[in-house]
Structures are given as C-alpha cells and as structure tokens.
Length: 107
Length: 120
Image (tube, rainbow over all chains, first blue to last red; front, side):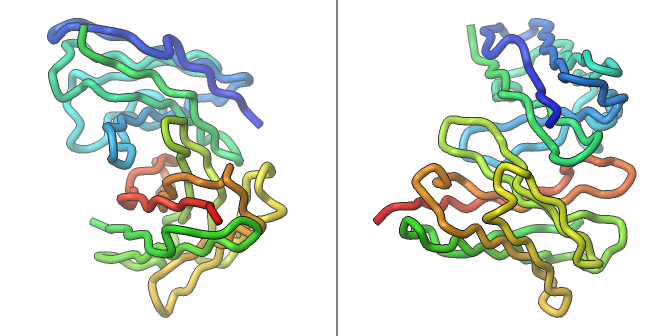
C-alpha cells in the first residue's frame, strides 16, 4: 500500500495568514493526489483533485501543487470558515489511502 | 447532482455482521462513469477506504479488511451495500459512502455518514 504522510499534524494560524500543508507519498503517485476539508461532524469535502485542479465551488484561495511524491496545499489568506482538518489522498491505485490529517485551528 | 444516504443499524454485537446500504438519489447508480465506495472513520481518527464496486459488479477491497468485506450493487433499487463480518470494537466508526467519477479520480460526493458502534 502507498503510505501518505502529512505535515504538520496540526497548526495554529490567524485569519489572513498564508497556510501551507505538505503531503508525501511513499512512492510516486504521479498527479493522482486529492485534498479534502473536514469539519467536525461532517463528511469530508473535496477541495483539489489531480494535484492542482480546483473542485467546482471551492474558493480560489485554495490551491494545490506537486507531482510524484511531494505535494502542497496552500490557503492564500485563511478565513474563519477554513478552520478544519485537511486530508490528502492518492488515487494512483487501490487501495486508496489518506494522510493522517492536518488540523488547522485558531491562534 | 447525485446525493448519497447511508442507512443501517447503529449498534452491532461483536462477532456479528455489520450491514449498511447507500441509496443514490438524483442520479443513476448505473452510470458507467462512477465507482461506488465505502470509507470509515473511527472517532477522532483518520479516514480508511474499505472498498468499491462498479456497475458491472466488479469490486476492489482494502487488503486489511478483504477477508471480512463484501460490497454489492443493486441497480433495481439504486443502492449499493456493505457487509463486514466478524466485527469487533475496532470496527466502531462513522461509515461513509462516496463516489468518485472517472476523470476526477477523487471522492467528489459523500453521504452524511452513519455511526456504527460494536458493543454487546
């Protein structure tokens, strides 16, 4: 199985901050890398697919980059509604696996 | 926009079989463009993909659960189902159904999730 490792596991930030979350795969996943946002008690929501394609309806302050084994999710200016947990997930082969999550909370 | 809704018992006894159904609405489960998956999340923990089914009935499972999992599809009811046998407390989790469409290869539609507790 491909292992996905996110860093950091948690971070504290303020509204307006630029936030970067990284995800590393244990082997190349090409650009088959997706990012999700999950709020407490809710299902995950797709933000980014194919490493850098923005899902419809997702604000443009979210962006993704990377290929191979190293990927980044960036929030250009953190908004109050962005405080949540973020997960990366590969879709290169089965089984699909997720990173352990990065919790973004208020500083 | 396709919508998904999980249903099934919220409490299952150890050693029994957990059975959940996901009903697809505002769309057809017979679409050739979708895989239909089950994903679970223990309280306070991360996401684990359980497996998926395609319209043809072909399946892929997570090897860690493969010996206990069956995912099936019922096109007449626009539903797909999860059976997980010989459950233990470690199977206590929120169970989500989700779909990924060809081209995106990402879980773009999710059900709201259903909590299943394994307890005597």
